[in-house]
Image (cartoon, rainbow, N blue to C red):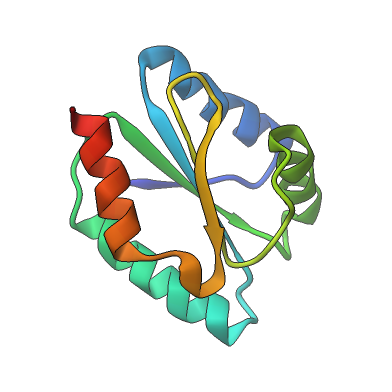
Length: 118
């Protein structure tokens, strides 16, 4: 699965519009300097390589270089900023699930994906 990069508010606005096509959205926030973030990002990337389509679109945000975008998303979605963090939005743009650090678990992600396919 192709992972988009969100670097600006314009990127974020374009990404959000993908829900209009019936897509759910996954936003993964990470810090390139944090060992925990690096580990979880690696696991997340591996999970992404093993899924196809499923009307789910994925994007990453570097919380260091795009701090204002990350903070804006936190305010907009009413989800406290953390890193690493995963936020899953349903096709209506509502937060379906979110987790941070080691609570971002492959089993949970597959379960959410399974509910999406029903």
